[in-house]
Image (cartoon, rainbow, N blue to C red; front, side, top):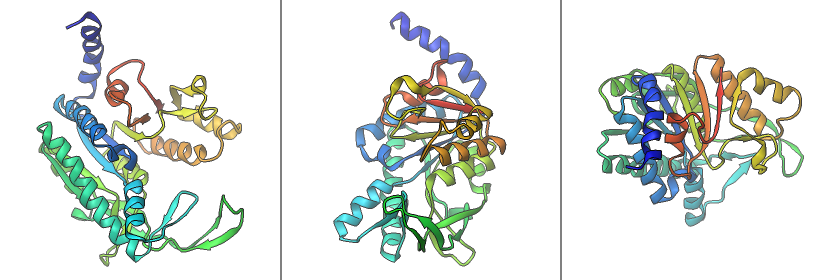
Length: 295
């Protein structure tokens, strides 16, 4: 083995010792799980984290695959400001795609690496207790017109019941949770995966929430590599929003993360899910690959 690789192992050792027995919640976007080779590579990285004693809980969405299936089935989709209106047909497809295909694909990739993973939706074990999102007054970014929107079968998280997740983690299983939840009447809802991941991270008192997305961190000016922020504190994030440096869609994402840190999660990370070894590099090296936000 070459000297640089041995040096990397040495660099990883203190992190392995520090994080053994700690809980990481890892959120995978639909785009990350879409490519088979990428998913296999990610499963290897998750398996390595699991094997060195880190308790891993995976949460996934699947908006890209849901849109693809809707196009195939000829079911028209309404997406307003990035939020999907979920009618009856779309909810049925979401159940098929989220709790079915994507969840099973992730389990199969982890199985290939010898990991005993368990596929769940938020409905299993009453894990994600939700309520229907009430109609909201929304300014459509495309038209600039304010309109009353009923998002249909879209839910908001009321509470996370972590009993089943803790049983699985305590027995060395790796839970993989799709972004569905239900209310006390058994009505199933499509729920934003970022929100579920965040709420589970708080409930499990996670060391890290790691968001694997199609961007490799937070930029002061989108697309300008030199403006990427590697490490931020919650106070620095607040200042970015207050001083008008953070703009557009970056603001709610940053505000959600700072709220999360105030509720006990130690750090949040935004990294690029299609970048090989990005997850390992973020966890086990000083430099990392994305943006890390600490309390």
